[in-house]
Length: 499
Image 1 (tube, rainbow, N blue to C red):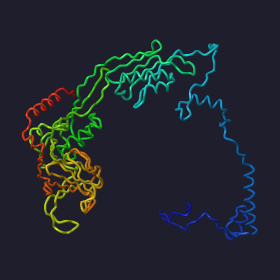
Image 2 (cartoon, helix red, strand yellow; image 1 turned 180 degrees about the vertical axis):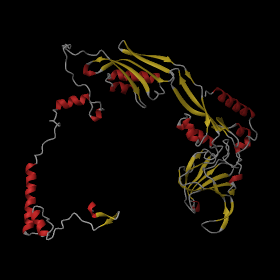
Image 3 (cartoon, one colour; image 1 turned 60 degrees about the vertical axis):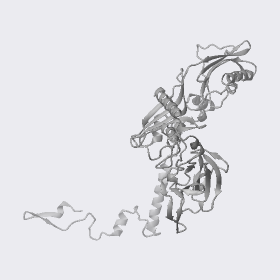
């Protein structure tokens, strides 16, 4: 740092001269002179344990002692006050708004004002009115006893409700209960119970002449089916749920479509789903959904699907009019078989190897591939391709875990390399029934289903098989009367359903 006088003017210009620092420059001024002037300021890091060092250390100790002496003693912070007694704590808890499980309580006593007059005795309530909800699996008698009703009255009321609704009380039913004054032991007599055990019945139970009288009132119920339609969008299942279709009904709809198309890939975003669901609606506005009656899909590419529950040949299933008009059973062709009895895909997966000669990836030889392979994932469900009886369910050498079904007329199907089987020999299975899960047992390079069809013990191509059973032989031509009834029923169902 430099002073202004370090510069001087010379001939109109500024000339720099040697700088002067702020440090003392007097002749003969050294360290000893500095120590004499600043004898209290001692550098304790130098000249350790000398006379001057001890002088500085003593000075430091003296300063610390003075600081401690003049510092005030610590005291409690102002404003905290003293603790509250239990009575005050109870009062503050009563004033607090909190659930009982967190300590909130109600019913704290209030101080009596000048307008309050003491009573000689506390009044007794003439009765108690309770509005409750009868949960799933609960009994009206158990509910009454929980509310403090007389056990004998509770048993008699429960018997009257069961007699009025022998099929059982619906879930989550509102109940209005009137109990009389408390008697011996604190129990109350039942005076009145009102509920709707079913959508079609309004039930009132009243105490009369030492007993109970049940008064039933029938309620009109509208059984018009409900129709739900909408766009498939990105996900058929979630579009159904967004449209208000119950989860079990949506699953039943997808299972019905699976008898005709591949529900995992065939429906397009602009396709329109169409469902008719059995529904009951009471005059009070309560609605209850029933089973699925109709499953339709209007497709932008490919034929549309129209399926309806129909009983034919002693069994009921999802059927369309085309299946009734076509004699015999269709093969796999290019997708799922018909619901009239044709083979259906045993697993929802693409075909990775077809029927015929091929190079075996494990044995490294060229040999006949007697079936078709589906590239399914481990654990995917495998269903029966048609109605039949289990003739084998166990280990079958290179086939691994195998299930073999007999369908009559010398036609068998087998499902191989399974990870787990859920059927047993001799069991009768229906088309679409679960029989096991995809695995990689036996001679297998990875999870897949090897599916074979044999006729008279000879392997045939499953892609072109046609099932000729005795039932088909007895009905070689379509029943035109049944087809007409089916179409009339479908038209009436679609026309009467409420959207």
